[in-house]
Image (tube, rainbow, N blue to C red):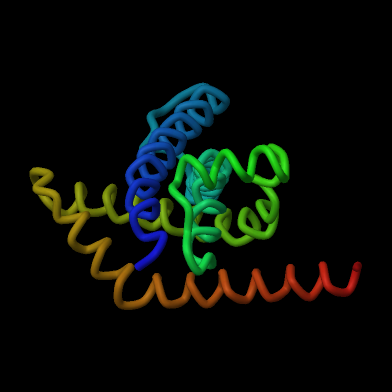
Length: 171
């Protein structure tokens, strides 16, 4: 369970940043279109907004991901502040973002599909139900757990493998 504490600490801010960025990008897309509401944007625009939001959240939280990984790999891990300070001093600031590109290549399609599916189900459920009782959350979670999540996880692993092969070939 080493590194799980920081994983728990990063989940809430990452989700908050992702949803805030998603709503912000949707608002910008509405302004660019010149009319309508956030619910009126197309599916492609939702994919773009979701992918962008995922990239923003991943970039913001990535240093915590690196620290979590280091904590998990050490036999006897130092304290979180000490580990962060040691990485900063010995390896420099850029180390906190080493490996970000492959991570972004995996998260952009994942977050795009994830948030676009959520938004589409939310809008459809509002049409099906006379008053919004939160059924979109239940249907979304069922879909995500049963089908979408497995497919997206497979897709993300394939993207990681492709990036690894390309990087290995180049170097």
